[in-house]
Length: 208
Image (cartoon, rainbow, N blue to C red):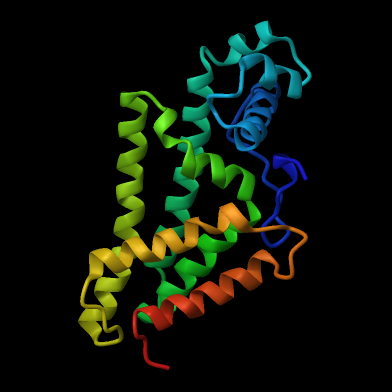
């Protein structure tokens, strides 16, 4: 399955924000190549070839291979943050919001597993400026989950002695789904999301 066809609950991953079409094709090709071979082992020729274009055509849209990775990483982290922010700012108890956050985050990492692997695990390939920008987004991602857990502790819903450590554990659990999820496996992204939401609620000691 190509990156453009990855699904989560049947949704298509269109990369609509990337224009023109040639730039989008190159970005999708880069995601597939980085996920398959790793950033450092991938050449601009590899990316252009996957997109059905010449290497020279790539430089019309992206100055460097790193610029491609930066664009992929920025879009991916923006989406991840939007998913968690929507859950964190939603109505309901802390338990309901945490379950929604975890379920949605896991579904994204399962349904967009190729993209998610690049977004989550190629950060160190970015230069200092781009890396700092993405790390700032990661801190915002962390803050959304931590805020829900803090709300649950304050309301008495959660029993969490170490909020910081628990937040890290929850995010790590969700993100790692991108490593192992198999579209031909026994569970769908929705089913994995529901399973992990239940596991996390147990982790924080949420009342039944």
